[in-house]
Image (tube, rainbow, N blue to C red; front, side, top):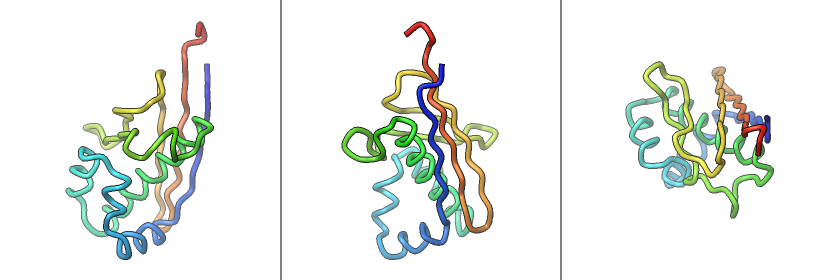
Length: 121
């Protein structure tokens, strides 16, 4: 049973500008494990990874109907690339199945999160 759906669209140029002005933004958004993956990338690919994680976490907050803030923070969520490069939620406050999708263009990242719970609950 679907509990929530969230989508987000983020401009990668905006992410790049924020990182230049506020390098601490990376530590605010990424967990230690996500930062380890991020540090393997450079240039456009690094911005895509960071922008993707920002957008996925924003989508998650929308799916939870709380947004990102007091109820759900950036560090409460961890989304790592699996061996095939697909994003997988490895930590979240939601006690069900979390499906995520991310897609990039040169300028934008679009994400979707679907929260599923047992129909018996």
